[in-house]
Length: 103
Image 1 (cartoon, one colour):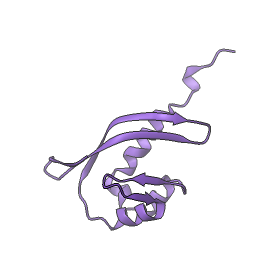
Image 2 (cartoon, one colour):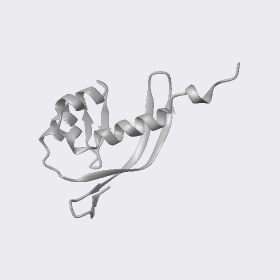
Image 3 (cartoon, rainbow, N blue to C red):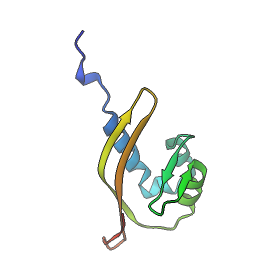
Image 4 (cartoon, rainbow, N blue to C red):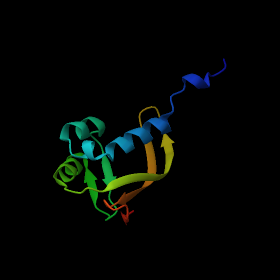
């Protein structure tokens, strides 16, 4: 039986959209939206080397007064299974004047 490519979900595209949504200022300030988008097992490795779980990242983001704009670069889907996916990317933070403040 031939596989119909038009019905295969674009997992990489869907995950990229979710990551970009998570980087929007409106979502980053909303405890409810962050809770909806992040899995219970969520783990983030920050650029500082600090490791965040779901509750600590929600607390940090909703308390932050940062007005940086974020851009995703080099987004790759490393691996996926029926219930798990691993993506890696660089995140560029720009200050209000457009200068890169961190990567």
